[in-house]
Length: 152
Image 1 (tube, one colour):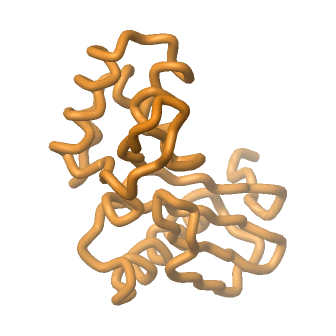
Image 2 (tube, helix red, strand yellow):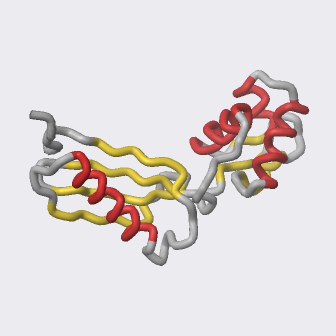
Image 3 (cartoon, one colour):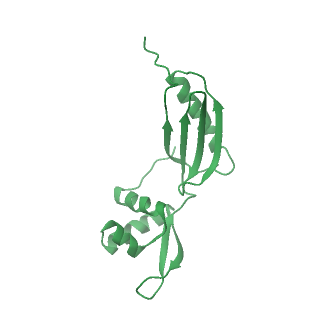
């Protein structure tokens, strides 16, 4: 089982780095934190393999600064939509790149049956070679009307 063990400040940095690579100075500007606080959060994220250091970026101070970004290989996100007649799902990296997709027929079902279909789909998708062995960090599931209310 996967447990997210990041502190709130580290999550702020990770969210900022999912959008685009940033330097430490840009993270200071984006967060309003001190350089020491940004450095501490970056070190925590690098140690946990949540963030990777990349190429050097030129800046107005004359010397290049390292850029950092969210490690797309660290964890996965499951996204799905439960339509009127099918369940369509995908597994994405932290960079939003789609790694695997799956669509299965879905009839008018109970909430339990819908959740079982989602569970089965996640198992199929996480067995895909492009994603095997990496934890699913989050899930987003759209559930419009095909879920029946079993209460009579």
